[in-house]
Amino acid sequence: MAIGLCFVPFLFLIWKKIRQVNTYWVLGIYWLFNGLVNWPVLQTAGGSHGLISRLSWFYTVTETPLVLLAFAWACSGKLRKQLLWVLTGYILGEIILISWKGHAMTTSVLIFVSGTLLILGYSITGLVQYVKRMEHTRFENSMVYVYAALLFAYGSGGIIYIFAHYNLNGNSDNDTDSFLLYYISLLLSAVVTSTGLWSYGIRRTGKAYRPTSVQRTAGYSSSSS
Image 1: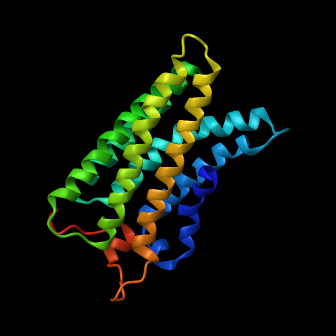
Image 2: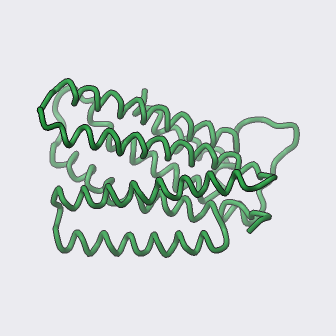
């Protein structure tokens, strides 16, 4: 169920109203990668270990840039400029780290930890910005689901990562519990994200909604920015 729901945000791009917003394109691609990188666990036999390894590595180096790009598209003003600079710096840092260390475990850990901290920080920032505003657009109401989903996913993912990779006793039961918690977290965050997208483009309301030109290209134009 968790893996299947990862594909739902991408499938929502079928609807024109959602397809018009660049933020949702990035989120759809991000969740598509999430589904693909987890898909091999459904295979009971066969499969190419090399292909799975390359796919996992590709996801490791692209997930944080995708999330930061989605956040940048979803905001405006100084925060967007800051996010774009952070995104550029993060990608350059990845390139330098990979050139120096190669595809090693240390590289993956550094990328994961730094990316997790950035996503958690900007998810909290997005939620704080939402609470500060008195009035909200339909896009902002949908993005609050995304911020909450990613905050939960990466917060719980960080805790699971610590327990899974620092299992000094080598207890297989702990590994099983970690996988269970991971997929529960994945399922819940996919459901919450899908709910946010549904609330923007699919749920019927009393008035017809037409996104502005800024919302179509960047996400929204905040009255407070």
